[in-house]
Every structure is written in C-alpha cells, then in structure tokens.
Image (cartoon, rainbow, N blue to C red; front, side):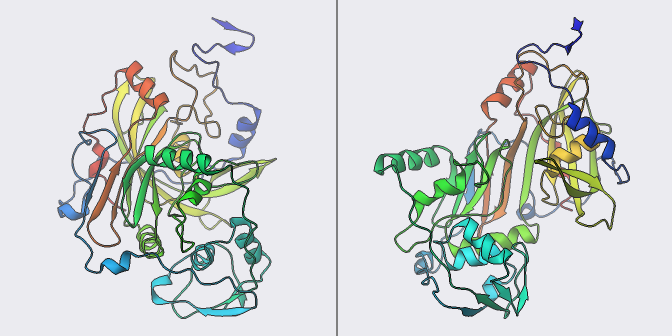
Length: 412
C-alpha cells in the first residue's frame, strides 16, 4: 500500500529519486545521440582477437596463455633512481612515450606519495619542454621533463608485521591471476581503488605491502568505481606498466561488465554514443550528457546486450565499453532510461519499488578482462558475481551459464 511517504520497499527501504537527482535531471542536456541497432553482422575475426563464445564454465577462474620469456633477467625488478634533491632534466625514453605525466613521475620515483606528485604538477614545478602540464597529459619520446627537488614522505606508522601479513593474505584471497609482471584482482564492492578525501582503506594503499627491496611496488593500470566489483588489472613492474598503459590507450583491452537494470532496453542489443562532461553540485560530482564541442566534454561509446530478463521489471544486461570515461556505463544506462539497480548517483526512477530480497547496492560487475600479456600471449580473467548480485541472480532465477551476446559486439 502507498502512504504519504511514498511506496514502501520490502527488504531494504525505497529507492527513489531525491531532490538532488530531480534538479540534476532538469539540467541535463538531452541533445546527445543514441544509436541503437540489432546485433550487426560481421565477418569472423581471428581467434586471437576475439573474446570467445559463451560464459566461462568455471566461475572466478582465470586463463593465461603466453610463452616463457626469452630473457629471464628481464623479469628482475628495476633499481629505482635516487630521489632528486636539486632540479633535474630527464629525457623521455621510447618505452615511456604515451605515459601520463603523473604515472611517469610515479614510475621514476616509486617512493613519492600521490599527493606530492599532484602538488608539484599543479604548482607548475614540473615542466615538459619548459611548459606547464596537467597530470593526465601524455608524454612523447624525446621530450625534456624538468623535475623539481622532491621529498619522500615520512614512512607511515605501520601496525606491525601482523597487519601486513593480513593485508597480503587479503590480496591473495582476491587474486584471479598473478605472475612476475601482472596481477588481476577481484575487487570487492565498497573497496576504493585509490585514496581521497576521507578514504583511508584502498587497493593502492594495500599494494604497499608488495613493495620489493628495490623500492618498486605494483602500479594500478586502470580504475574501478568504489561500488563496482570485479576485475582490476595491476602491473607489478615498470615494464608491464608501460606496456599495459599502451594497451589501454590503444583500446586493445577488451572488458565486459554485467549489470542489473530497471526495465528491458529496446532493442535488446544496441550502441550508445554520447558526449559526457563532469558537473559538480555542492560537494557531489557526476557525469552528465553534453553537447559535441562543449568544454570538458568527451565522446563515450558503449555496446549493450540483454542477456536475460525477469518479466518486464528487470533485465540482466552485458556491457562492453569502447571508451573508458568516468561513470560511463552508469551514465549511459540512465540516459536510455534503464538505470542500474542500486546506483546512488544515477538512479532517477521516481517511486520505483525495489523487489523484496534485492539489496539496495550497485549491481555492476567488471565481469571479464582480456588483454595482451606484456611478454606475449593473452591474459583472460573472469570475476564471479559479488554476494549481493549473486543473491539477486538466485532470487530472479538468472542463469550465469547463459550465452552472453555481447561477445559478438564490435570492438569500436
């Protein structure tokens, strides 16, 4: 029954759009383009360029196929250079071409804190060919990078060997794949990838316990939202970090996400193409649909496919992002009128009642990642459903072994 306070929500309260979401929705531009079409017919690609047919038979298992390296010594950790106490100028090497400025500084001087790196870039103390740069700018072979005097942060007070062992055990428990160069983690929902305002526990901080005797530590290759669970790729060496960064930059990495959305998208397979721009309201920020040419707007493309439905109320959707914009999948599904269940930022269905037994948490999983291994071969890792999504799948009778039609979506 509906009272003055709106519809009640069995099993966990109501999920409705609040005042802030209503204000945001009124401001959002609807000038973008949505292109949807049935599954395109295309010529089969060589097996080495495809993700394969069907869902993996073993939940949470990983597959890696690569030849052994010819040079075993190449796997040895690099000696970290000393932190400069005076101004230095460093030339960008060929294998560093394309690296972000902040990643370049982190790779050169692993002991630097994230905040210190951002500060020297923001203040213009670090310059490239004599000019100020942004942290996200890409370097080119032969450019001259002016490095200011740097300071290693004071070693953080650690809780002791027992705490470090617990962190190592936790990382091992969520590891889908690991070798001398690469680590693939099954990041839990609710665990941040990087630190920020008020964020103390995060994956990047946990990787500190894996720092080797030469000061080298694993580096994040890409990001996942805090509430998104699933495959997170980490480079254990500078060599791997450079190679994998290029893989993502050239869009050679193939990723598949699973989501539970409101309603059933029509058509059941399609392509979403918009421009996205960041907007800040009070202390919150989100991505909004923007116009082509608008300042700060970036093109974003997502392929989607409905895998299975639960009546007309909910649908299990598989998503393949071509681009990697912040909140891209969440903003795109909201844009076509089928927001992801449990999304605190982009859920705008007024008076929508969450079915009993389904938790009000973000139902988005980075299900699978397929990338070329830095030393040859392919890394193919798959993450199982997190507990809250597994509960929903069981309740709705969704079968994870069903064929995933997103496998046939184009790569661009």
